[in-house]
Amino acid sequence: MKIPFEKVSWNLDIQGLFESTEKEAPGVRLETRGRELEFNKTDEEWGRLIAGEGEREDAGRFLQFDRGNITERLEIESLRYVVLGRDDEWDDPNRDRCRSCYYVLVIKPLEGGSDKEYERVGLGSLKKRDLSLHVEQVYIV
View 1 (tube, rainbow, N blue to C red):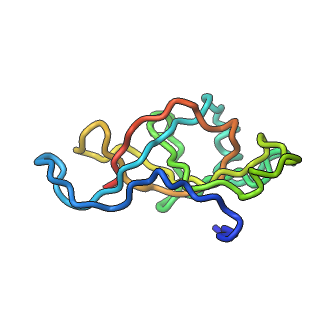
View 2: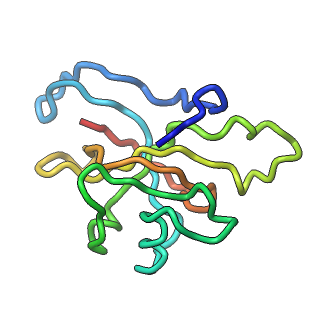
């Protein structure tokens, strides 16, 4: 994934790595906020999103998984997205904010972890309309 680093407004809310003192989750983890997709996509829409295909207004929307595509409905619904940054043209008053690109880390629940522990499974680029306004605290281990 090519990201124009100098043209991205990075999310400064990500806490960074730290040493956890909790008994149930010792070790290093990342603390941040995760979001769901805004709406349930049909299988066809999901297929276009992971293939990076779509109409002109969908340009730049895609998800790329680390180990093969996730296609099972239950797995898809459990995914969360951490916004890492958005394109820097956000502050341009002439820019249509709905077309802004959000760079995301794709995470899924950690097997055997608490309900707030997730692991990375991919990355991507989404539009504002794709992301839910509902956020929840997550820990990436």
